[in-house]
Image (cartoon, rainbow, N blue to C red; front, side):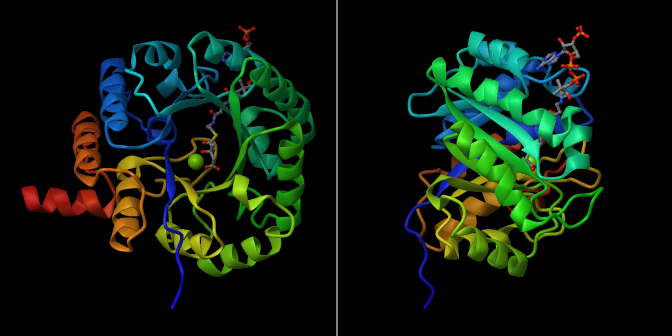
Length: 302
Ligand code: HMG
Ligand code: MG
């Protein structure tokens, strides 16, 4: 019989990865109300926004206002994406608990997403990590397109290790490996994690799956078999990267929690409260959310 971990940590990225891809701009008051509902679900981590250029991601231009308006729940880490020193300064002014730096394993995606080559990105992030640490913040590092890029196709797993090592050497506390456009299949994830086990510190790794082709939960199962116990997810399956063609919904928090609870794996999350938060953002966005849990709920309500 397969053995599963007893407990899994889910990091909610919906207010950032979810909303950054929505055509409809969510009013600031609704963002705050939604994050406050998420804080009551038992989630221990919420990525609430990003301090990037408002021209690049207008949906999140109110990050500072959001940060100073949400109710901080004890035990919840409130994190935000930061691409450079300017973003870090803005984040620190709002008392963010954790900052997340981000880059891509693909040269083309990196340039399209943050307007720099991979080589040019390292010193920028190095400075952010160093300054954030001096401010007493923990730092997460994202590597995108680890299983494939919309512009370059296959990405070499060795190259992913190389970029990850550079971030780890800077002192990041956690490494989130992103399947940005949801191309990974369970066989590929198994092969990559088998190789990376000897190259990367698994106790610091989170997996960040997008569900573009419906394979995110299957990829989680394989990752659990490799003893990965931290996953990023977005409530209702919202999400995507505007600078990665074809990137759509993240792994749904509600589907993930449901699967894990059915398997007897603890998450600390209350499914009813999660549904309440999902219903809220669905009403605001005025469209059915793609997760299976929400599809079922929407059918029951018709
Ligand atoms: P740039 O144009 O190269 O920036 O953009 P620059 O350094 O040349 O500066 C140009 C202007 O931008 C200056 O203003 C700066 O002050 C300003 P000016 O002097 O012209 O008035 N500026 C800023 N303003 C506000 N906040 C800042 C900031 N930095 C510079 N932080 C930059 C470079 C990185 C800023 C831009 O490309 C950007 O904002 N990119 C963000 C893209 C993004 O957020 N993508 C989505 C997130 S990543 C993702 O979704 C993947 C993930 O989910 C994992 C996965 O799925 O794989 C994490
Ligand atoms: Mg993402």
